Amino acid sequence: MNKKRDRLAVIYDILDIIRNHHNSMKITPLLRSANLSSNSFADYYAELISKEFVKEMIDSDEHKYVTLTDKGFKFLEKYKLITGFIEEFEL
Amino acid sequence: MAHPFIFEPSMFITEISFTLIATVLCFLIYLKTRESYTLTKHEGIKYFRDAFLLFGLSYILRFILELIIISGFAFDFIIPRDMFAPFFILSVGYVSTLGLWYLIFSSVWKNFSRKSLMITGHTTAILLSLASFFLYSHIIILYAQFILLIFGVILIFRSGTHVKKISQTKILYILTSFLWLINLFIIDKKGPSRIFGAWGFWIDLFFQIVSIIVLFIIYHKISHWLK
Image (cartoon, rainbow over the protein chains, first blue to last red):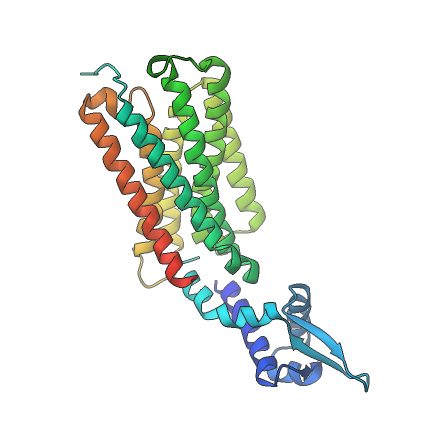
């Protein structure tokens, strides 16, 4: 029933984890911290990339990092208000 | 006893003002929810904002339809009713029926597949608008949408998982839909003006003010969350 709302909450959690790691995190630790199955994480990760909430960066040692975009920060900033709106209007 | 239809310029001015305010409020609700939809792609938000976009368009089309209906005896010019009215009846029927459906969908979308909602909404809107087009009567829309509203109310209350079965939001949804129907009835030649004579104007005005208050409350509540 609350699948959609749960989905938004998972997206918030993943973005929040990245933000709390100084906005730079490798994908494997992110997968562990997100507390999701590999398949589920892959789906969410693909969604975050496609929605441009996060972007991948490669450092000089060829390590892949993920960071939040402006849109990702915007989502974090607005999340509580949007979920409040969804609840208030029973959407 | 039916009274003859009396055209009053003040009635026309209030109609223009009402249409303008109601349309602007509907479009403001649509615009205010744009960012939250862009960020989340939430289905409920999509149906909700689209419903108000469609209601805004419906109020504009309703006003044009009213102009066509009253042009013969209210102005020096006549808009060829037989030529234009059926197309505006068709448009009002389609757009407003879809608006009502979308408002219902915004509350019940989790219980149905997107495909089934789209098929139901568009098929009903097309059938209803075609029926009113061929029967040359917007009152057909009124009766059919009234049945749709009753069905929608049952659906919304049955699908509710919230503790509060009768919430303020649900009442606002029902009022928005019901007041649309009243406002559609107002433009009919057999509407309040024919039934209540001079009092018809004040009855029209009362419902128009209530409609604006309801739309404003919705806009205000949205503004509280989506600053």
